[in-house]
Length: 334
Ligand code: NDP
Image 1 (cartoon, rainbow, N blue to C red):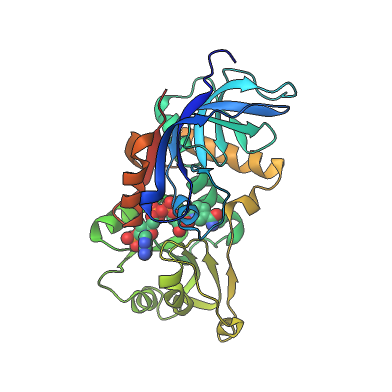
Image 2: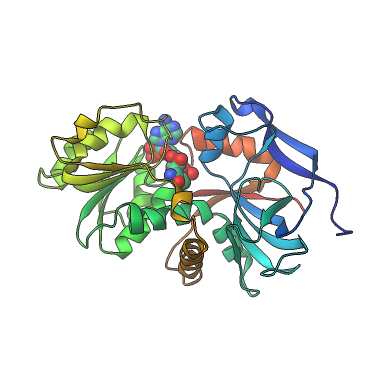
């Protein structure tokens, strides 16, 4: 461990609040590895909307809290009990605390060994898709698995998760109605396979959904926007349809009466990614499936911004103000 420093650069919060509470610190302790821990020297880390929820306090966390949920890097040190990894292995990890030069995780947690011949572009794609790609995969495999030819609704269609959802659904011959706030974003959604487009800034979402579905409504709605679109989603889903409410970009869905589901016999679920990756088998299955999709170029990870770690505040402000498409990635300093 001699070449591993004792202090490192990280992005963290010490209190909840707006973007002003985000801190780039250069003397945060490097975690120690014990037992079955591995220490990963991070190379790239993805930016996700969930960081906003922790920063604002919507999701609780102990402070100080190093942000970041996914990264790729190299194993820099291992604990005495580690069996599956060795120093020098390239790995991807789905873990908290990745906006840092070093992250310590248990080898039993969500860590994927990457092939030695993996290229830099693929590394970026993996770093930028562990959260979004695994979310999209589990949503279409488990939260609601649409039938061939079925029409479904996808919000934030040009966003990080949105573009991946559309590609996966299109590949399964599911017909996608994409919702986004600009025509430019809708063109991106179309290029990923969306068939029907709705500009939420100037069109009535429910009216357009009914027009595209001959008055019937969609079989399912994949809704990451939350508060602002809940009513729209309720009205857009057809009889016996499913609402997959998986995000809070506009705020959390307020409490509602379960009776609202009665008129159309609707189903609703509010899944979180980790609930689909709770066992080693689930992690191995979905992470290797994602890696295969990336390496075989069946899933395009559209990285639209690669910036140094210290610029996270600027990136999240762009993300939160709806000015981004695709995936934003951080390069971790050496
Ligand atoms: P996106 O790239 O999709 O960015 C968010 C998008 O949401 C915006 O570009 C915008 O698209 C749309 N949006 C609508 N209303 C608002 C608003 N009031 N403020 C901000 N954005 C708004 O982000 P991600 O891909 O990182 O995440 C997408 C969603 O998926 C998030 O809600 C996230 O929490 C959720 N998620 C949930 C997971 C889970 O386990 N349940 C796991 C991963 C992500 P437009 O302008 O086109 O409307």
